[in-house]
Amino acid sequence: MVINIKPNSALAAAFQTLGDPNRLRILAIIGSRVCSVSEIVEATGLSQPLVSHHLRILRERKLLDTKRQGPFIYYQLHDAGILEVIQQMVRSLKD
Image 1 (cartoon, rainbow, N blue to C red):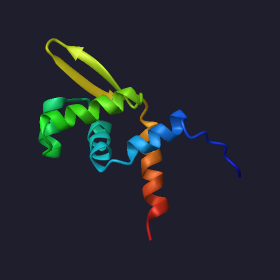
Image 2 (tube, rainbow, N blue to C red):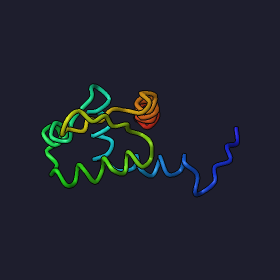
Image 3 (tube, helix red, strand yellow):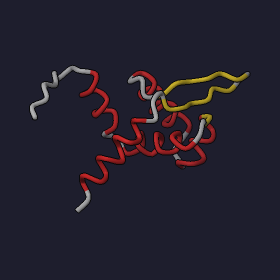
Image 4 (tube, rainbow, N blue to C red):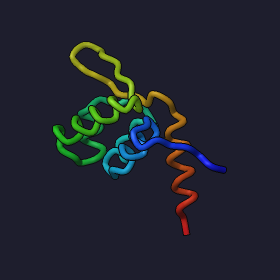
C-alpha cells in the first residue's frame, strides 16, 4: 500500500508532535481522565512552565480540548483514538 503524505501535512505534524516523550506521557495521563495543569505537573514531575508549553503544542495540533471551570482549565483528549494509534505503534515496535 502506498500512502501519499505531504511534508507539511497535518499528519506529519501530528507525528512530529508525538515524537516528544514528555508529550506522550502527558497524553497517556490525560487519556485516563480529564486533568488540570497542576494534576499533570504532579503526575509527571515536570515543571509547570514545561507542562504548559507541551499542552499548548498539543492543543495547537488539535490533540487536546480544553474546558474552563472557574479559574481552572481542564484538558481532555480531542479523540481517544490517538491512544489507540500510540498503542499500535508500541506493539509494532516491540522486539
